[in-house]
Image 1 (cartoon, rainbow, N blue to C red):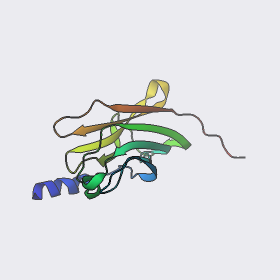
Image 2 (cartoon, one colour):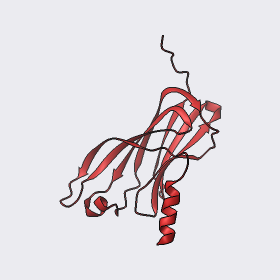
Image 3 (cartoon, rainbow, N blue to C red):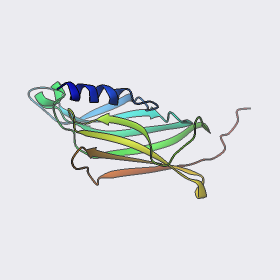
Length: 154
């Protein structure tokens, strides 16, 4: 038990990961006991690329287990990242850099967003997927942002 608590504490201290802001949610399944199943929409800014915001929609399991944080959320997610200002790199980018991570079960499953830079096309590519300690899921979603000049205000 001490090892699991230490591991969870270490994961919370990962540097450079974005923190999501809840934008909204819709209920998908009514639950008599506990919160409803829902789809949650969250936004986060890329911590190493100024001028980029990503929007992530994902399933959140309700019911008694979901209300207690014991349920395992589904692996499906959708992502859309957009240029929201002038793009500048705040640090060196590495392909596959983890930008965002959120646990989707008590211990073993996480949803994460990683970034790639397609230099040839001058485009940032973001991939969302879910993994488990034992077996991940092939379900994923991708979005791309061409790096374009940002219009200056007069």
